[in-house]
Image (cartoon, rainbow, N blue to C red; front, side, top):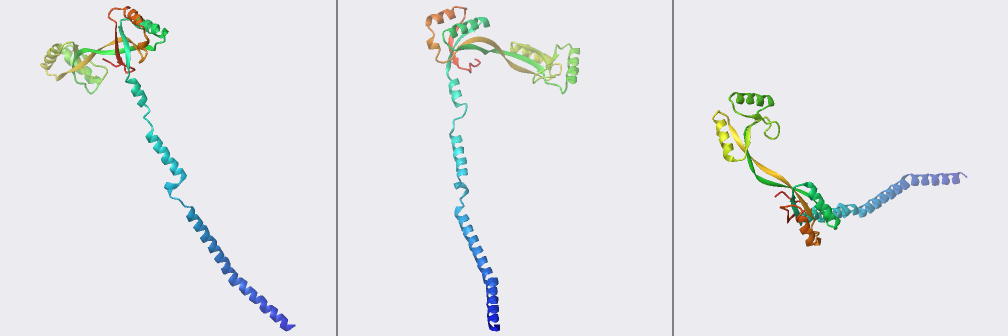
Length: 238
């Protein structure tokens, strides 16, 4: 019995030693093996950023935008077409009548005010003072010397002194010299003179649909009316 007990004790000790030392090493090895496998799988699944589907989508979208036409390109081409113009009208009511007449015939027409430069005027002035108070003081000084003038209240020459606007440069120059002789550093500013005319614009492609008899009737409504062409929408100043 003692021999059997000793054999069993030795066997249990041997089993315990094996489980404690060798089984732990097996678990560590298995764990390391699993970690290595996971790392290898992760490495295989890695992609360059430029190969990722999302990045490809961004690049493709950018290229699409770059190839798109400018938003206003088509509009610019359309605006460069020529429209037929009828005018100038002395009264707006007459132009409105012509537009209604043309629209009744299915013609696209509209009122088109046009600014036309008609010569120049010449403004004799003294440069602006630092403040309105200084401008008034300068005005008082000039008027004491019997120099006709007034304070400019708005615009780029606000708080300056005006000596008048003249239709002829020679007149402005005479005034300039007169004030300069009193010791003031005056100057002349050229100003464009514009007038506004009222025209009727017929959009591109519609004038050909108007019968000659209709043109004749429209042109006979007022002396001085004429038919000509100008740029559409830009119906620019002349």
